Amino acid sequence: MEIENWMESQSERLESKTKNYTAKEQTKAGYSYIKSALYLAPAKIDDDAELREFKTKLEAIIDALPTKEDGEKVEYGAYPSKLSSFKKEIKKKYNIVNKGTYLSLGAALGMQFGLLLGLLLGYLVLGLLMGVMLGSAIGVALENKAKKEKRILS
Image (cartoon, rainbow, N blue to C red; front, side, top):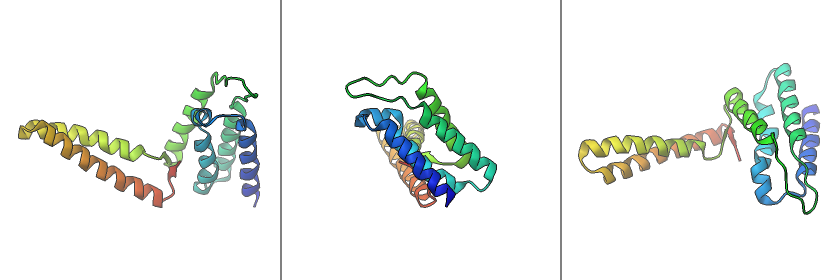
């Protein structure tokens, strides 16, 4: 019950900090990422010390969020680098990734494979097309698997 209260209070703090943000500013600030991590990551943590560490880091990210008054421009300062570090740690520690990560990776690897295949067969365009299609299919499969395992942040 304690964790649910903490999640709710942090969600309210996040809402309060970003209430004057536009949709574009929320995207740049990683609003949906933080909100998703807030509810998804604690379920992956078994150790109390690790949970306390996660709570501290998430609270620090919310604290670092710049506030915006009506009509002002958001001054992000050092916040983007803090958010980037937080995202890397979430991915590394809990194997939680952004939506579209596996699809992008699959398409990129498929393009490289397709280029090689196209050069070998003498049909570059056909090889690239086949490679991207195969890579994208693998990416979609990995994305669906991660979604079922609740490892995808929105």
